[in-house]
Length: 479
Image (cartoon, rainbow, N blue to C red; front, side, top):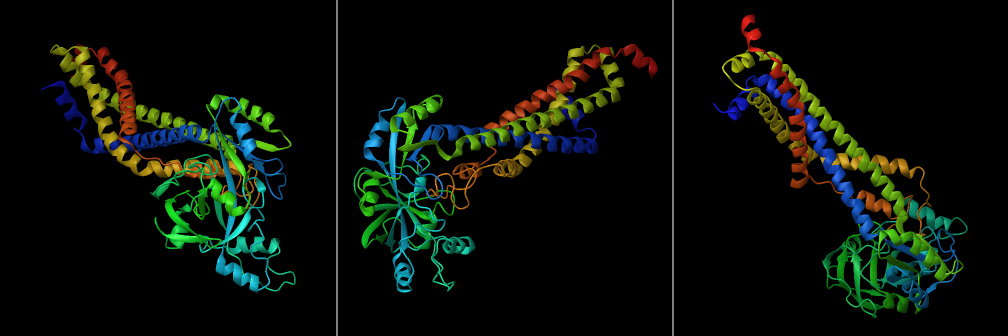
């Protein structure tokens, strides 16, 4: 009988004990694999953040961030100045507006309200805290105002000065003009249907709608709607990842400027730096070139907060992976020590008939690998179901803890209400944190199982070496 066949037979000789050992190993190995999957997923998200928005700087009008922001709008000349700063690879301007349903606006005007003159719930306009122009549209907002929206309307004076109830205003729809296929964080738009807007430097009657906004209005690619009585065609549908973010629309930058009647003006600029290492220096150079009295330069989305939180999750998952892997190794070590002690007579007989120590030791190492393989098979199944929940729990606990010390304004956020709902203590980073997806890919699972086998070999070597100390004459004399 070959050594491998004998090892496999010995591993399942006592079926009850084998089942118990495999069950315990499966839990330890499953946890180790789940933590490894979570670690890889978070690591991939960190790389994505660095690649997509880690090199992005946001330029707002000086004094324009936060509630009641002021200052002068940015201009095309300032965008040209920003483009000339060293290490700047791209500058994309944005222009933000607010859309109100035309029928609702007419009804509110008839009721004596100030329809179409407010920046919307929360009192905020576009990026930078500017009061964005409000236009009428045939679209109906996909997000209900609810308690918070109505409360904000009362704070803005839209509920009537005498306390008389006025017609409730729904949330406005954010319309953003962009100079490239980017959202206001510098990330490429996730277009799920249709295509982009083509030439982003020209006036166009094409638009991109968020998924919930398109669904609310029963619109698809090729459908039409109106803004200020002008017809626009849906060129594509995008998914921003949040309900608020999907209650938005994008048009080309010149189109938004024409609608607002502000040619050459920008609500904000998205500046991309050529590498992550140059971000700090470029930020300082950009601020100096534009002037502190003209523009505020910030690193988009409170990225460092997001990265710190993700790196914390990554470190925790790696430590947990090592701990679970070590636990599996200790289990294998203890089991193999017990088996060596139980089978001293068998080992003595094998050595008496001439079996070398390396052959006997190899038998126990292979037996440990058989147990590890059985445990890994069950553990991989556990990891495939548990990894997503474990990653979400780790991220949720860390972002909740960090959020208690974060800075932000209710309903506003770092930019005074960016399109896409970039509010809260993390700004837009909260959306990125929640978008981490952990999937048990074959490559990651294979790597984890290889690590388990390595630990199994190490755990089996010690008891295998103990077989060399067993003297056949002592074993046989005891019989």
